Length: 543
Image (cartoon, rainbow, N blue to C red; front, top):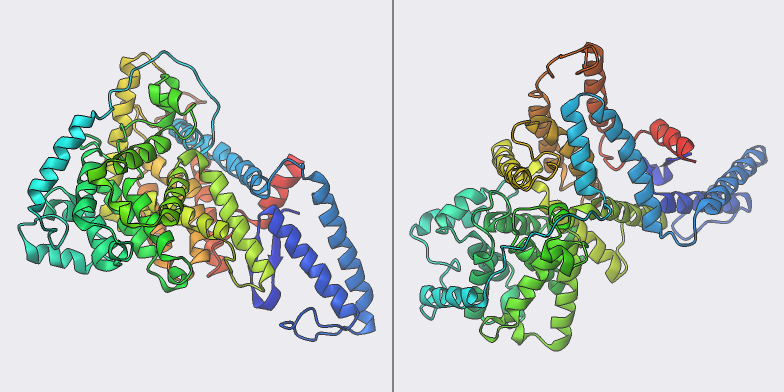
């Protein structure tokens, strides 16, 4: 069996992660044994004693549960972590779904390949060397510092930067705690300094974190000017506006009461700062491209989270400059912990780690609920950090949960950035990466696949964690998916084996709607990634 339904205390949860399943089965055996011996399981359990006629069936059920646990424990390899167990299971489930998706049409195969290449950890490929053209000379930082000093004129403006229309900016600030914040409009009003302004407004005006940690405000503003300048304006997507957008989304999620009291101020500060710098000096190219071309950054970081390591190194390198070191007011312990948390959070934005992060979060949520009678309790620093990583990663791919006009604007930008990489690959004589060929667009299907296989499972887990605060995002996600799904063009029929026929298309529609229908029938529970029957069949086939 692959999924367990836990109806304890009226819960209706589908548990899919292996470790949580084992805990749930053992807990049920414990409850059964206590009922048979007429003892309460613990102080919170009802005294539900059984009559003699029920005891034999309870014993048989308990023995079956023990057999199931022993069977699954026997399959666990000693070197596999709990997270790896869940990750491997999720990978099998997702691989099967992607296989079905790829068979619907030629563009479906391209989308499936893109999902695998981007969100699964891949092996190494060696190609010819291409020198990096994106290093920022030190003199450039000095010039930006000088420009920031001229702009400040000794005082920090109300919004971090000077603006021409105070009224328009005030209206934007009044909306800063809303999910569908228009970052493109904010960028215009802030005179193309969205990251500097957003960082100051959130960290100082909204949360007073800069004041709490004795941050020198002019120094912080100069630092953020340098960070913003090292976001490439020529990137359609990975630019300072994206950095500000992710930071604002994280600010909203961390403001919900369900998590507001969970994290320390330093943890919140680290998460928001990590969002601000998480894509600094991004070249508009993927990690896989850098590895395939033996780019010097890929060599430096041994093909491991190449860009994420570079973003962190760039941000902390600038922090070493005396005139940019805004963290000097922190004590040594705070600085050390802050740096550690920021590193862990930014590394979690590596898209190839998506599946392992999802598996770890899902395991933590389910195991905690099993252990605490349906309540989510984050008892350790590692558990809180894991959830923070999930929040930051969710914000990084949150455009699909925004109002359709915002989502479409971000989609156009990321697709154009993909195409620009494809243009470079074509010029270098390389095989074009999935989704990067502007002569063979598959925008609509790519967004449906992106939502079905990547965004929805992560946000369903976040929705379970932060219920009911993410229901607005999940509803919008469904609407956005239907918008693109309804616009998937019919594939041209060139031969008897080329392109889907009517039955194939109907199967694709039925498959794509399955998850939506499952969520509808389960009501508030959005945690499961597969139906029970599918999960059982998948496990049986993989054994």
